[in-house]
Length: 65
Image: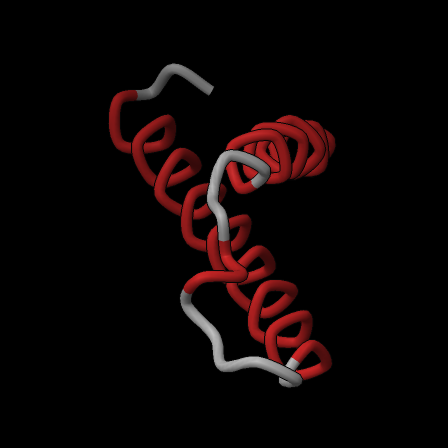
């Protein structure tokens, strides 16, 4: 369980760092800042969840972790 928590922390840092490179303002309409922020937040949470579960499944199936 501690390993999964550490993996979540590491993946969270990597996802936040990588999402900073995306210029999300060009995608959304003008004056839709709240919806853009909510979408960005949900996208980040989804990426963190998916990447962490993928890595955990990979580690468990290859018996690394």
